[in-house]
Image (cartoon, rainbow, N blue to C red):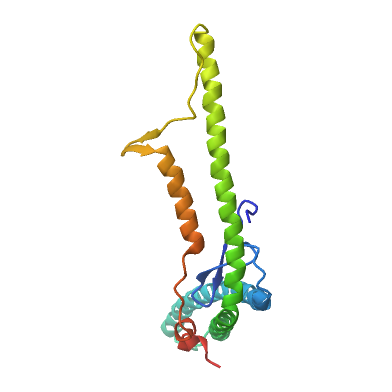
Length: 226
């Protein structure tokens, strides 16, 4: 499951860009939402582009508006024709167009997320079983890693004891598998308890039951507009 540096396990869904897990990052076979997630990615990019255009046009309209007022002031002073800026009129029209497109894109994002939530409700049991299988695999890996760490720690202290014995070869050689307690700023931590706590926490993460959201909560009113 570990990815290249910089890759993130999070994607953003909906107009408000709420965080959600990326199935591909976790190597989950959620093919039922693959097309919807690809659509979401495309819409998120388009929304960002439109937002950038919106900001730039907003600034341009404001700038041209100030320039128009300045030019009208000179026209009034000189008694000439009071002409409105054609460039400003064009910029305002483009701004309204981009504003409308941006709002439509945000609505499309919310509708896309609503469809994703429907698929979650429909396939949640199957996907949970898939995750449970992967969790059991990871728990086995944690158990193996802790066992390997303990063994490696024993080897380290045994070799360190050999180094100490070289300084006084007349003494009996012996060694212990490692410290029974680690000292921290807040006090001592029993090593055995630490390993047991790590394993217990991993087991709890694997076996705890998630709280399930209701359909009404997942599909908020503004997301199901048709």
